[in-house]
Amino acid sequence: VARDGFELLRLSGSGSLINVASIMAHRGLRQLAGYSATKGAVSALTRALAVEYAPFNIRVNTLAPGFVETALTQRVLKNPLFNKALIDSTPMRRFGTPEDVAGTVLFLTSDNASFVTGQVIDVDLRSLIPTDHQTQTKAATGTSQRPHHQTRQTGIGHAQFVFEVSPTRRGHQHAADA
Image (tube, rainbow, N blue to C red; front, side):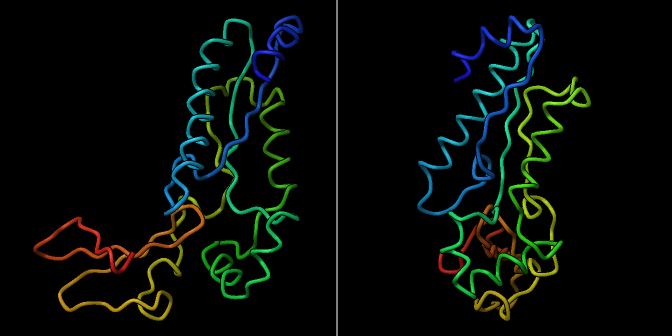
C-alpha cells in the first residue's frame, strides 16, 4: 500500500501515511512470537519510510493499539475473569474503543501533527502506566511470595507477568511464576 500510494501522496505535495501495528510490536507474550515479530516489522518499516518519504513532505507513522473493544474481541470479553483482569489493569477502568483509535488517526493526519513522523503511537492505557493492580501479589495473581524475595507484577501487552528478584539471583525470572 505504501509503495502503491506513494505516487498519489507525492503528487499532492504532502501527505500522511498511517500504518497499524499492535502494542505487541514492542511487548512480548508467550506463544505470540510470530505476531509480535510482524507487528515489530511494521514499526521498523514505518521508521524507514519516514526517512525515505520525508523529502516529499510525506509523514509516516504507526498506531499500536492495545486491547480495543470490537466485534472481534467480544468472544474474549465474554470470559468474566479475563474481562475483569483487563479492566483492573487499566487506570481509567475501561477498554479502548474504535473512536479512541480514530481520534489518534485524525490527529496524525492533521496539520497539528505536521512535525510528527517515524513514530509508533501507543493507543493503549495499559502499556506504560503502572496501576495498583500491578503491585498486588498473591491475591491478584495466585502466586506465592517466597521469603526474602521481592515480587513485582507488571503488565506487558495483554498479559500480566510476575517477576521475582532473589537476593542471590537478581534479575532472574522464576519460570514457575511467569
